[in-house]
Amino acid sequence: MSIEPSVLTAALNAALTRELQTLGASADSVPKIAVIRDLNAAGGAASFTVELGFPAARAASDLQAALAAAARAVPGVAEVSMRIENRITAHAVRPGVLRVPGVKNIVAVASGKGGVGKSTVAANLALALAQDGARVGLLDADIYGPSLPVMMGTADQPESLDGQSIEPLVRHGIQLMSIGFLIGDADHALIWRGPMATQALEQMLRQTHWQDVDYLIVDMPPGTGDVQLSLAQRAPVTGAVIVTTPQDLALADARKGVTMFDKVDVPILGLIENMAVHVCSRCGHAEHIFGQDGGRRYAAEKGIDYLGALPLALSIREQTDSGTPTVAADPEGPHAQIYRAAARQVAIKIAAKAKDHSGKLESIKVATA
Image 1 (tube, rainbow, N blue to C red):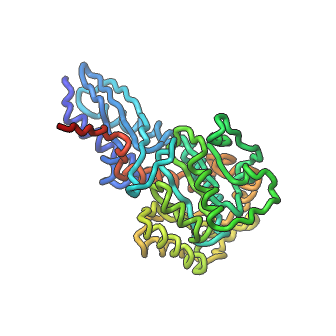
Image 2 (image 1 turned 45 degrees about the vertical axis):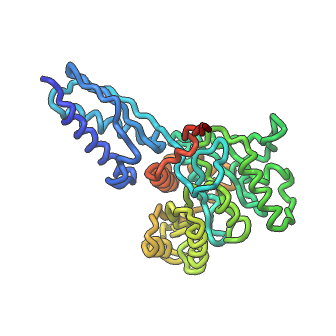
Image 3 (image 1 turned 135 degrees about the horizontal axis):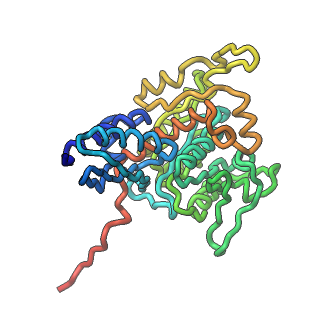
């Protein structure tokens, strides 16, 4: 029996849509983030390639099994072979902003105030993307209170191989840069005014030798001052993730962060609610110390994607303080799964955005008479 290509294509597309929806994609976004190509069907055998616009290494086996089952259900198909490829590209940002060499997409992780666990979330999002197969960088943009050296467990100082750029440190498979690596002394306080801090951040962003980074996660300093606004305006930020805790005080400041990104035309990719609940490690009693569902309600009010809620957990604090954040320390644990689901939703949202073709335009030659 011969294989009908149109039937096979329809079956594969239906299965692909179902599987990607389980990963957090909407049905209408699937054509933007995934494509089936190189389809061949003859002699009872079907072969094809699935190209994904986001990293999904940890979901590849389930996706492969679902597509193989869908193909074998088509009359005439006895054998199936396929390849799953990730093709992560640069996506559109505000016009007129210069790209950062070696970086495809920049994700700002921000909060309106300090103390909500933003840096911990940023580190774990970066680790989750890397474990899913992406090339990831993590930039500590908090000039006055850098936390990356402690969180990622390294106090090494970066080197310059050419006297012009700085080589990022690498830890847990992620390229890293922080002012904390450059000053060396952990007790040293930087007493800089806004313009100096902004210039230092600009140099770390553009003079680090980022090496083919798919996603550069920027751990933004708390607040909405000069440094934050300058980065949002001058850097080609693909989108922002807002971190908040449930209580009204934190949400009031989170609103200011959302407003700042709105004013500079940076899309909000989603909101993460941190310290949403505390579960006693002895008796199991759950208590909402900082209130309940404040972040979820605010996300619904603003039409922002709610990326998940993380508990106030002793293990997250201990793992971060030890220099091995949760996703690296316990990748199969329940807390890592929450970070992983949030990171995948961020990657899917970016993949659905318009692609940046600014670097692919052919030069135009003007001939004079």
